[in-house]
Image (cartoon, rainbow, N blue to C red; front, side, top):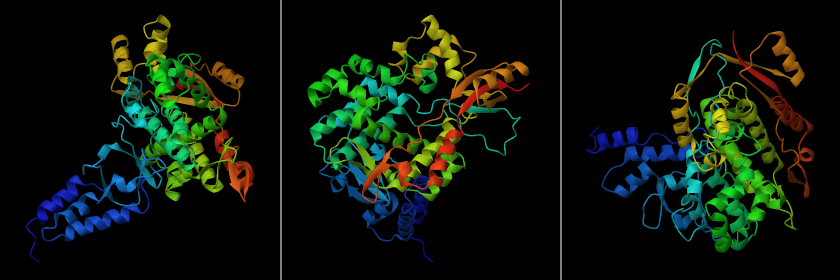
Amino acid sequence: MHMHPIDSDLERVLSFNMPAPFGFGQHPDFEAKYRAARAQAHKWRGDDFKKLDEAIMGKEVSLSNLADSRHPEVHLIPRNDFLYVVDGWGDAIGFERTAFPFSSTDFYVDIDDEKSLFYEFGHSEAFFRLGKINQLGYLVPPRPEEWDKEINISYLVPQFPHTRWIHSLLVAILMEVILARNGFAKEERNPMVLAAGSHDVAIPAGGDSIKRVDPKNLHEEDNFSWVLERYGLAKKWAKQFGFSLTLAKEWVRGKGVFGRLLDAIDKICYTALDCLYLGTIQPGQVRNLCLKYPLIMDVWQDIRFTPDKNNIFFDRPERLYRLLLLRAYEYQELLFNPYCRSIDIFLKKLVKPLYKKGVITKEQLITNDDQWLMGVLKEHCPKEIEHYIELEKLTWRKFDTAEERRKYCKKFKVKADHTEHIAGFDTGLDWLTLKRGEIMPLRQAISRAKVKLLEEVVASTVGYYVYYKRP
């Protein structure tokens, strides 16, 4: 068979420049569309380069065709098709597409449009630093069962790539769309979207691990107002968008109907991003549940307001249950997994002495990022800071009470590396949902077996832990 002159070059383009972008976290219908496009590219003949471009890059679609008058600043991009999305000048939006795994849609907002509310999240020092603060800090993936327990393992840190900034942007986007689709006017939405996008603005460099250095003074909710005032954002937003710092503080603490909405959106967003990376790396219940329900994050589309606007509920109980079960598995397999937390304390142990001496201050921690913190630690603790961290035969035990832990350590002369008490987390079973036209807590809308499973997963994380080096 005669080969078309461009065939060899085309094959190189398809095999080298365009690795298959489907897989875990992707829409279940996407792979078929992508493969069909590749097949068309291989069959391409003639000089219709537009068809070739579509076969290689995806079907071209303009953002204007994805616009929604209810929320014009947020475009929803279908994830079930192989699309090449372009702006008004015909240029690809590329990395400006905000991916939302396990859902039907990605999003686009123009953070460079000065008229857009979302401009605020891309043009302030307060938000720049969030792009350099890792969402999961020094947590490491679960140790595979087949690994020899005696083997020391070294980890490049951080192990998970997503940042507080991308999480915060996603929270703001969902807040805008949900409020708009529930009938709130632009003027009403603006303050809530700003609060949503800035809810983590005061997270200290180093993230949750560093909060343990001084829990009473380094929590992001307690420093929210200070940061917004320090950068002049509270005053600017009050004048430009009707923002109330007093109300925003309450929302960030989960108070009132909009606080409850922000809390729900926050949990949806971090669960989506965390589980994408955890499930990609490690088999387990997180991966299994996401594979079984690949659009599990479409739960955000189920959020409704009661007629009096004083509360929110989810109108699909089963999908809400799946989200909460997935979040519980994330805590069990990653967030509260003692192996994953073994070196999460690493930064705290280095920072705390410097913090007590005033070498590192509260103000520095909530106005700088991870890179700055590493620079300070390399200067003061050069031998401890490396590009990788070795898990030095660290093991742990869990006890039901602090007294049991104390007795064990005394009896066996255990020298603790560190201890911690994990009290569990909210199951979400009291979140409101709709069943047969009646609004009720989720625990009343699902089977007893499902309630029991969710409670058991939460309970499995509770305990008093001691970490120590193996003899």
